[in-house]
Image (tube, rainbow, N blue to C red; front, top):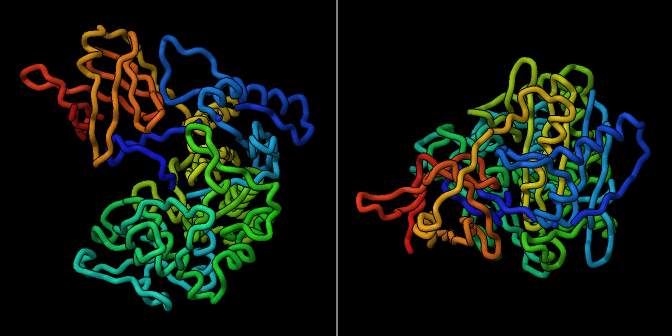
Length: 485
């Protein structure tokens, strides 16, 4: 998961995204398909609409978010309908994004990892409900009293219901010492994250854990005797036709001109162009939207009994069956009868991405950017869903924005704190701005003198005052983000 993120609280993630725009046409399409592309490029939208909103187009939104490059692919009727790229894979080299450009898929890696683990279950080499220490050879999970005597299982690891620590990983810059998987799991140097341990009883709740997914990586290597990337290439990526993709970290043997350079939210490149992720299962996949569409198509065909390149229909349906809430095995699902969406998003240092597929209607899309700012991905996804008429996907919330007296805005200005992270609020003229990340300022939109929202974080918030009419903070309805200055 991305690590340049700011939490307004544990459930509301305010992510920042930014970069320029240049279209790179890779193929010739029919007039009908070209019209669909044009419509997608000119109907972007986010979760909320106001009385002041106008139609957004892709080029303007890339500039607005400071996005260096983006690549999009769309699936229709279980076929790739089109793929198109915009902007630069590397701005300084003037190297454009193309259909073949590879991005770090970040947490989307977990979905393909789920396929790889289920393949071993299908082959009788693993069981989803057995204590993982039955399979771990080179390292054992250190149970303690926190787990309450409950075993950690593969099903729990893949569905984030194992109650384990370590949400995500920052990766390692070029030249850094790279830890082993065992060192990562124990939080031992040169690992740059803490130990993966229990913080609640397994099977109690869904709490996202990249650390748990890293344990599945070690299980794969311990059981098969193969390096993780070799197992995944031979048993998952190649059979699905994802031959341009790789889990190698760093991507040794891949043409470097195909690798996108990652960019921070302010548009500066990541040092060394990209980070290295020895946590391959949760964050290490290099791929393209076109290759990921092949995974989406194979999943839908297998689900409907029309293919079985890796998993049988039975095991594909198992993989898409929620274990707890909307969390299935390496994927999140919603819908049931007329639509069944499966999806995952991801963010590594300098990259954000998103995919979604519908196994019932044969639809899907992949959006990948080489930027820390992920706002564009959701806006493009909403446009694709609208243009193609996807059911129950995009339902914007309509809000009436109102002006607030400048004296009231002045009272709201100041410094706020949540989970040791500080947020700054300031007034500029008749506007109130919030900075969740240094150098990034977001507009606050008021629906009353106290109620407000920011487009980059779904949901409405409210400023709080005490009995003496002093501003104490703001909430999203549950958690108080405290005003400290």
